[in-house]
Length: 493
Ligand code: GLN
Figure 1: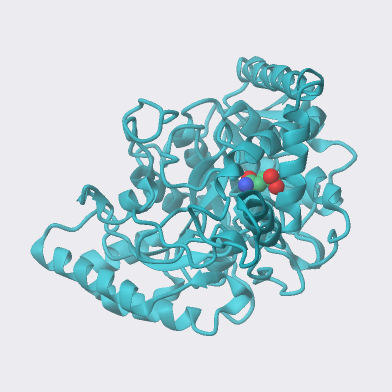
Figure 2 (figure 1 turned 30 degrees about the vertical axis):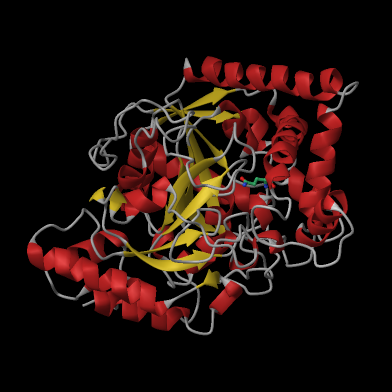
């Protein structure tokens, strides 16, 4: 039998259902791997809680009432609120915070909303992330940076860096992530795993700590498209009473079309994604992947996404604007940290926020307040909203000519820790290929397609039209049947 920690979600589900291992045995194996907190991936672990959940899973398996992924462990990004583990969103301002409820996505993957129809997964705890999901390298966490399991001198990507590192290092078979401007796709790419951000509104945002509400979306990170399909099927579905932006689209079995042939599939290749800024090693790996897809029957169609470059200024106006509003709730009154010394209410607010927020979060709150302020609103925020619409329209024109779009996830492989420490703009610029799909609300995923500079993983991005997640997963799965990049693991695992 494959070692438990090297099994995929699909293999673990099978192993548990056929009683070759118990949920307690599986949980124990993963808890042992997370001991000592390799890569600083976890922010909260509690073996008693995890083992109690595993025991409950074993009881459901014995009783014949098991969920689809009963007993399979999962780690949750610390942006999802959880009752049984602390929730910090990577911020000091929420240190020690305990939510009175679980996020919808956590419930659905666990015992279900109202304890009904849950997938039955066992929670391994909470994983590290950039503070309030703001970042591209997981260096903005108040609880320290996460390291990349492929090379610990490099970043794992962000903001879901803990999720990606935990999956790549086999500390968890799967993790949840959130993606506002690329935070599932880019760390998946940097750590050689598979991740998908579904269409905006597909998965409930209830209990997902808000960064930029018109962009935030939850999604799974795992080692294969097959696993992502299983997880996404459990995560999605309407949550109309609790999230007003939740789509009223029934839950879907995303595994159903994995086996479809790629014959005749039209893959759009946006010329703006293959320009000067793209590193040669990344380009070489993507080109080879496109050849494989062609050999599987797909046709490559040149397309254009002319406003790709504008996605950076547009996103870095809209996201901070929304963040400045969302983060106003952290005032020392309701949640987490409160300054010790203050003279009156206003000084309490000021000191609490000055002490509680990190530099990047403060930078974004200031940018957001500025672009929304009287006198600048029209010049920045309104303009950005107009261009956002044009970016979405560009995609619709492109999808008249192709079924999916393929390109790089990021211009380079994972960079060295500390590389961009004095230059936040360098991190922003590296988001260029993930931001357009986010601004348009489209589904996007990252698929490992090989290795570049210094043996670091390279991910290919697939972008689909609204609600075409099944198609993206199908393309990724067919590609993974023909290749073994997603099966490679960092040394020593
Ligand atoms: N890197 C982007 C940012 O810093 C995206 C983050 C995300 O998707 N949460 O805002």
